[in-house]
Image (tube, one colour):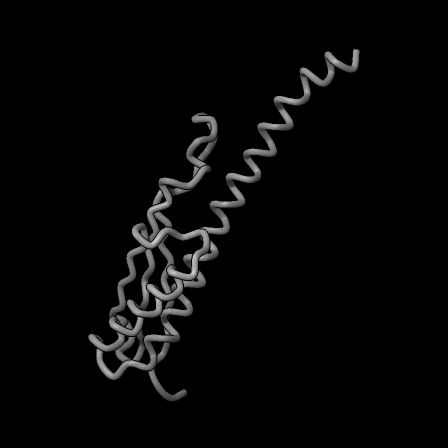
Length: 128
C-alpha cells in the first residue's frame, strides 16, 4: 500500500519542487535586474553629461556582471537617457533576455512569465 501511494504522490511532489525552484530562479533574475537598474541610476548621477553617464553605467554593469550571479552578461542591455517628462531627471532602463532560464523547461500548459525582463529606474540629478 505504501509503495502505491509513493508511486502516485512522488511525481506530483517532484513536479511542484522543480516548479518552485524554476520560478525561484526567475524571481531572483527579476530582482537582480531591478537592483541593477537602481544601482546603475545612482552611479550615473556622477557623470557630467550623457556620454559620461553612459560610460559610468557601462563600467559599473560590466564590473557587477563579472562578479558572477544569476545574470548572464551577454543577455543584459542597459540604456541611460534623460527623462522626457522632467529635464532634471535621468532614466536607466535595464533589459534582460531570460529565455535561457530553467522556467522555460516546465510544462507547456503552465502560465509562464515574460521572456524579456525590463525594469527602469528614475533618479533626480543634483540637489533636492
